[in-house]
Image (spheres, one colour):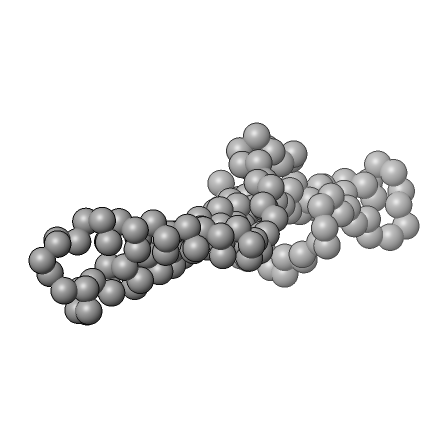
Length: 157
């Protein structure tokens, strides 16, 4: 039986992972440091001293933390895009393998039926000297006994 390829989702194109530009991210760091320092200086109350940890945290550390957060978000976004495409492709491969296994099982039953018919009927009608063996899909599995044949056929129907 043919495999129903309509049920298999299309494979996704895995995006290229590009390294972040050092020049762009260094420029962004400088801009954020300048903006953070200038906003801290202009927004700082006139009577408060500037040699405190709160002033320097707002002027220097907070812009660096914000820049690091932007860089981490960029890396996370790239990671999610690549892994989403890989997961889609893995799912498509699993569904395709499942479809092939399902239809291979059905063809094994047809193969077994044809082999039984040819073994019993072909020598009567065609005068074949030996035993005939059909292989429809892949290597043939030989079913040893009538009980095994019956249990395998009953499990498929």
